[in-house]
Amino acid sequence: MTRVKMIVLIGLAALGAVYAGTRPEEMTREEQSKLIVRVAIQAINEGDWQTLSEVYSPRFVQHRPGNLKPATWKEFELGCRIARQAMPTVHLEIEDIIAEGNKVAVRCKTTVTYIEESFSGRTTRKKIEFAEMDLFRIEGGRIVEEWSEADMEDWKTKLRKLKYVTKWK
View 1 (cartoon, one colour):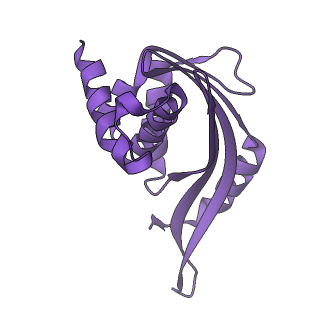
View 2 (cartoon, helix red, strand yellow):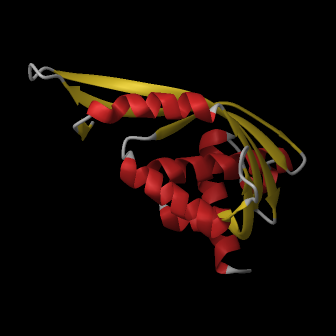
């Protein structure tokens, strides 16, 4: 058994008890697939690049509206790292998760918390949020493909309002 599969199985065993109350071998394919996606999203939230590289396949591709070609694993990972660097308080929260066969559909809320300072010196903690729908395809215990849908214009508009932000959380 490869090192990656062993790590994923150990992770499934540990998290399986938390999320499903069962051992991985007792979990359905759909429960295992949902768990893999939960682990991936948690790894993104924590900036845990090692876990992320173990849950995503090197053959991973991401389809996003407006992209002429799918993003590769390396491009996706770099994008996650850049987003974490630019917005260290970014947090994804799963609001709905549904699985069928080897596909997992997720509705996420992404939140960025920041501190805004006014000219009077008053500090205000604020948040911006946006929703995203993702469809993941799981193969061999790893994420191999993702289709993402989000209102990127809304997200960009909200981010543009942050031009006066002086520091994060």
